[in-house]
Each structure stands twice: as structure tokens, then as C-alpha cells.
Image 1: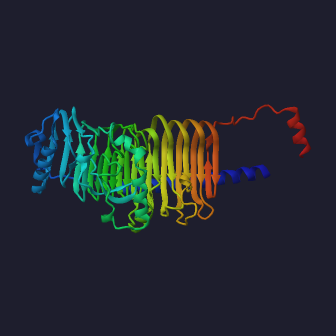
Image 2: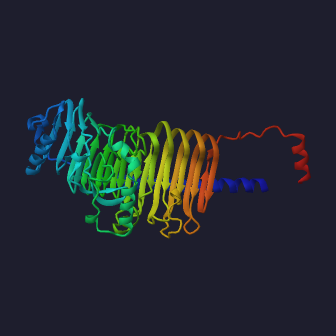
Image 3: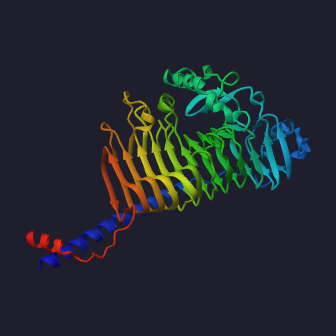
Length: 470
């Protein structure tokens, strides 16, 4: 009778746990689907005029400066309420300076078309209103830039080549003075109009930055040789990034950086980056607290990760990050970490409602790494981040060089409400490491191999031990 009672109790608990898990999954899917209904990307008038950039004087011979032609096209688009569908035919188009987009423009890079940007820094002056590593400032113009626009798109199977190998790529080693100056201005809450960089400084511009825009579509094109982050969506809403391809291995060549951005779909991307694939940010320190614009409602699905990290949250995330869904993704080769949440006592803000589901990785250093002590910064500060409600389901990895799961909270603000279910790692040096955490659960997880569920033959010593314990 006792055995029957225990068996019934175990079965009842298993049914309850299954019901809870099913309810959590249903809630996740419902939240995700509600987010997707808010995302359309750019929407254009069916009667939008179509023009070739050649009609504005561009030539795809790789030698003529085509910036004046693109400037003329943007001016023309701004004069028409329906905007312009600007076609760039096959050829190499040299641009001695940035393209500044306007509202209601669809820039189509046809197969074989290459936008090749000048490597001369002076071509990206005068400075524009932008941000750099989470702090607002005026700096060199991003190579493709849009500010406070409605309905903008870059589409087609062409290529965008930042051509930054010999100039901007080597600025990393010379940026410290300007980097620290900007961070000090952030902490001192210096007016943004007084934070002027550009000439005489070494803060690298972004390849593509859309700032304060609503209705964005970026699809199909190829990105290489970016001077800094490849695609930076700053304070944007309703955006789609789809079927992009990367070979961007210069320093800090993040793939997509949504910052203070909401309602974003990232899908079917082939990443191959020299830094993070997707890095979700929300402002640094004081600039994040003074601009309470969290990054939220972000769906990342059906992507192929390759590079440093798959999905990163932080470390610039002071306005908060929530409602992020990563699903049906995989790695193609080495990826240092699948999910990396990084903050510290400088940042404040929050990270919550993060869902990571149905993903496969070949090899990582750490599979999941969540830390509130990033880079040892801010140890004497008191802006602790609330990190919680992070749920991981159905994830596999062949080999983890270091640790499968690392959780590092702080005594003042532990990580909380984190669950892992059906996480399988074939080989791992360390399975699980947890410091300053609350309400962490692991269900059906195998972190470094699976122990055979069939007991081995009982030895004579085991028998003696069992008998002595009766």
C-alpha cells in the first residue's frame, strides 16, 4: 500500500508539473503572438514612383562618386508625399560620404549591386545626432543614416561594403580618451548638444543607423567591412530585419543592435560577425535612466548564429529590456555563448520576461551566462539591475568548453525566477554554477552527458552497505 501511495503521489506531482509547464509555454506563445501582431515593417503606397539611381547621375563603375546622385534622389523623394522606390542596378557604386534617408523611401539593391563607402573619415562630417555605446552625442555620420523617419526600407540581394579595413577598423586602439570623455559626460548629465565628437576623436560611426524611426524593413542584402556596429536601431518601433547575410569580422562588428527599440522581428538571418550577432541594449547609465524607453517586444527566430555571441542583453541596458523571444535558431560553427545577459551595479534598470526555446548549438564556451557583475564595473555603486523571469526550454549543445549554465547575481539583488527545461549538453567541463540566485529550477537537464537510467550490477560492497542501512 505504501508503494502504491508513493507511486500515486509521484504521478500526481508529475501531472501538476506538466500542467504548469504547458501553461508557461502557452503564455509564452500568446505573448509572442501578441507582439507579432504589432509588427508590419515599412508600408508604402501602391502608386509609389520607381526610379533608377542611374537617372540621378550615378554610375556603377566603382570610380565615380555617387553620393551626389543619392542626395538628389533623397531630395526628390522628400518632395513627393508617396516617397520613392529607388532601384540600384548591378554595379559598384562608390560613395564619398553617407546616404541620409528620408521618409517613405525603399532603397532596392538589386543582385550584383554594391554600395562601397569611402574610407576617408572627413567624408562623414558634419556630425549628426547619434549615440555611441549607449550614450547620446554628436559624432561622425553613420554610413546609412535616418533620423525620425516614417516607412523606410533597404531591400534586395545586393551588398553594402563599409570598406573600413584600413581606417576605422584600427581606431579601436585609439578610442579610449574619447570613450571615457563621453562616459563622464553621460554620468555628469552634460547636455547632448555639448557632447560633440567627430574630427579629432576616434569614435567609429555605425554602418547603418536608424534613429527614432517607425516602420522599418531591412531584408536580403549582404553586409561586410563595417566600421563599427552593422545595424543600429535606436529608439525605433515596428521593424523587420529578415534574410540578411553577414561576413563582418572587423572589430565590434555586431550584427544587429536594437537599442531602446520596441516591436522588432529578426528572422532568417545568416550571421557571421566579429562580435555579437544580436546585442539588445537600452542606454548606458544616466542616459538610460533619464530616457525611460526600454527595449521590448523583440522576436528572434529561425536564425543561424556564428561569431562571438548569439543573443546578448546589455551591458548598456539601463532603461530596461523585456519581452524577448528567441526560438528555432541554431549555430553554424563556434559561438562563444548562446545567451549572454550582462549588467553590473552601474546600470540599474531591469531584464525580465526572456524566453529561449527550441535552439541547437554545435560548440560554445558557455551556453548560458547571466551576470550582474559584468567586467567588475560599478562594484561600489548601488544601481543594481533586477534580472528575472528568464525561461529556457528545449536547447541542445554538442560541446561546452567551460560551463553550460552560469548564474551570477549580487547579494543586494539576486537573480530570480529562472528555469531550464530539457537542456541537453553532451560535453561540458562545468555543468552548473550559481551565485546569489532565488527560485532557479532545472527540469530534465543533462549538463555534460546523460547517466544511464538502468542501474548497473550491484557490487558486493553495495549489498553490504544496503543491508547495514536496513
